[in-house]
Length: 131
Image (tube, rainbow, N blue to C red; front, side, top):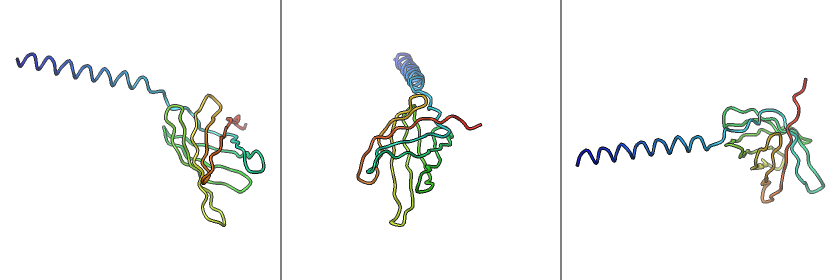
């Protein structure tokens, strides 16, 4: 009886180990988004375009959003091709936070941004490195 239980426990342990190994292989590597991107969304008065620069350390993203109203720090994460980040800009009327989610496909990103109570689609294109 002890041998049967021991054999069953061993088989269960091997099955779980194999399952976790296969599951780890199913996870895609994090997309590389480090560098400069041109990001665009539809504003109240037409298209808005800014420069978004990411620094990436594994799944952690930091960076800067640069536009007509100055620079805003960016923090976020990337898991596989799924990206999410937040930009927080200080204004005379208080802090303004924008929350971005999207999907990276090569040198482009598409997603949705929440600006206060408003949701908008956004897209970004990777910029060529400056020489």
